[in-house]
Image 1: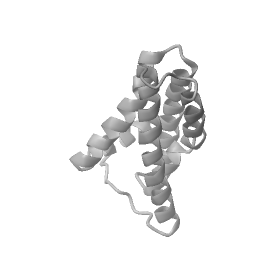
Image 2 (image 1 turned 90 degrees about the horizontal axis):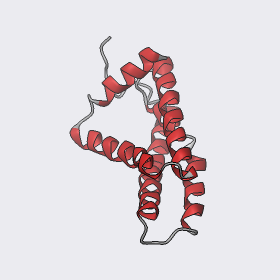
Image 3 (image 1 turned 60 degrees about the vertical axis):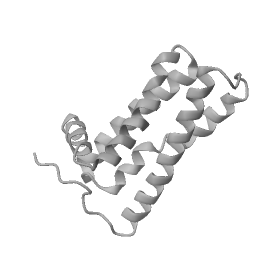
Image 4 (image 1 turned 30 degrees about the vertical axis):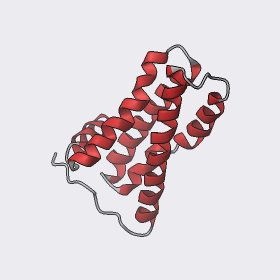
Length: 134
């Protein structure tokens, strides 16, 4: 699994710069939860982010750098609606509320991309999207 994690991170840097920029925005928005610890929403977001990284590393080790990596964010299907429910109790102008809205937005966009990727994989696009040399 460690080898999968290393290969996964190497592969990320082989993408074109717009994709890298998106990945930095996506991971940065989720990791910004550290500024809101010990709020339960921040804890859950960070735990789900860590679980997603582990799951993607396992997928990477098993099937390579394929579109199947979109399954790595499967836990976000539960996270996003749960975070949405938390907004109702927060003042709109708070930094915490802003963070929740950013995470919900970027994770939802990512989920849409992931669904399309997994569908493409299921339809036969199984080649690796980047080639990481050992």
